[in-house]
Image 1 (tube, one colour):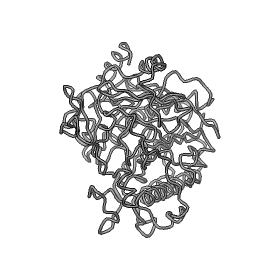
Image 2: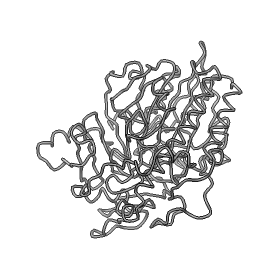
Image 3: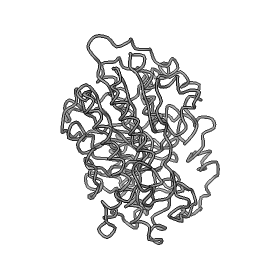
Image 4: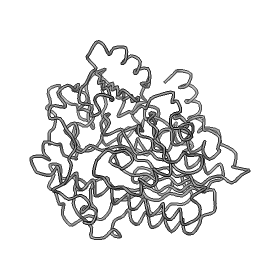
Length: 493
């Protein structure tokens, strides 16, 4: 980050940003803000899996603009969602882990979130499902954050016992056909609440946020969604057995010990196929819930004056690089679904320019004619929504824990870790990111140019940061409070 920009942001954050005037004049567009948890690029418009069936997301993409090169700011729920809602990078907020709630930060306690910015411009703000990280905001703080809360984010009912005996007995790390009916899944309830709200035709202008948990673990969905993907015809991800051989050791520290099992265990337990199938089933299930909400919007007569944005908070590995889960700076973790439709958005368009979830806040303000929040670190995507080939002045940057960053352009991915080790991939010739070019002398200039976009500093983790936190303390990597020895073997289970 450039020094003058950092100074300006510091002032803006401290003041919470100036409050915009109430919207006036012509009728403002409404906003339907759809979030999907742990969804990677396995959706029809992104082509991440050849068998995936997402007809409703496909229809939304046909009605709007799909960003084919969109990336999260952090490959973990809490920091990613905090970034989206505050318009700030994790390296600015200090939110890197599964906790704490960002309002515990002195510099963020009065910062205007996306919801608050719209509310102060005359919008009614409504939220249901998982929009903030699970459990946030605390109940006593909800009224200050959003006008109306529907059913909050929660995980669906689970069977009496896990279907899969995974190495880590974490109750959420499981997959299989469950429950019997869509109506028994929590995300169905979230969609039902949103549908009812739209049928009641809320007075505008409004911002309605609908957050779905699927395909987050446990990967449960009714049997009919599994039937879309016959086990004997399933296509598994393309992996390379020695893929980790050219990685710096520090790369493994970012996902050192996770409850999600490694590929080696999945293969040995004959669970790789079942997990992939369950994930695909979960994606198709959530697509159906998205479709219910979009149908209700159309039937309400409000579709033509509503900006719809669908996004996922980060990706998810299903064997690539030898792991499952997130917590990495590679394409599988960082690439996300990002689709806009509605007023001022070109239809049936695909934009290959790098985009960031950080851009959601300024883009929605721009499309709705609101003043820009000077604290926002993202850029409005309005130019690309008008013309998918419009120039983009910077790449996408993802951060996972202090000092670890990925820079993604249309051609390159550059990763630098807290110990200075690096990775470089030519996405044009190596779409799987199998060959690390960082040590080749002929790419020194490329790395130097890409490194200009790495944040100059990383804020310290907020006090009480816990859950998947990695720090680099006096030359020693520390995973969730425990130092990692220089010869400790990479956990393969």
